[in-house]
Image (cartoon, rainbow, N blue to C red; front, side, top):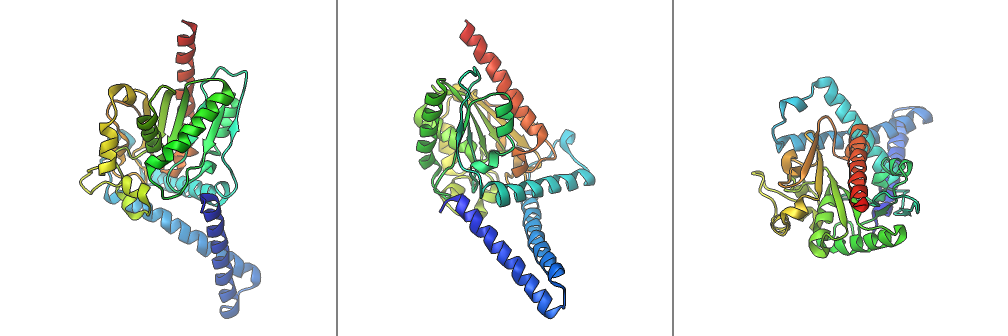
Length: 316
């Protein structure tokens, strides 16, 4: 089953739960139909909020030390929770059930094409906030839906290779830049190990657990097992093999964006990969990395700098 259909089924289940709660309140608590439905929806939303808050609590159990410059107060923590909750609700309940993988080509653009690779349990709907920014800069781009949901990360590399070939053929350009969120960054690295770096201009990872995350221990699927790390921070055997297969040239192609308040990647410093470039943020949750204005602006600056560098090389 695809993520798109899974999220649709979950939405139907949540709607049914809200109606059942409302019916019970109307029948036994005497609420009017309007208030009963409101209470049912509120109960489902409250449960979603509790799940989101629980992720922060679990991440805190395995968190790496937060540098003084990135520490936040109570008000900022509330904003962090609110932004992450809203981003999660919009992504899973509106964008992922609707948006399909696609491609947009700007034939007259000299910009490096961009392939967007989503993370664990997501699909191309995750990139809804970044796509308009790429369009505004007339950057050719494509998204890919990785399937099956709980598949082996190495098995996704063929899908990435096909998407890269299609993007290069359609745009008439090579190499490409890859932006990968969470597991998507590991998929990009696995793809480079399998297919080489000849078509890679830059790989930008957002909240990617390069050394694993303790919270992956709660997730099902082969990919979740590959992303696990121990309480002491030891990466899974798969992650260790992935790292051992990379040379300094490959690492130099990577830019890792991460948040010291990531509620899924814990320890948060798992996103720090030796030999790569790093951009740290504070006060941003895991899902919100794909919609936060500061993060998206930094991604666009990274792509702009890449385009300038590539233009200089072409002019030589």
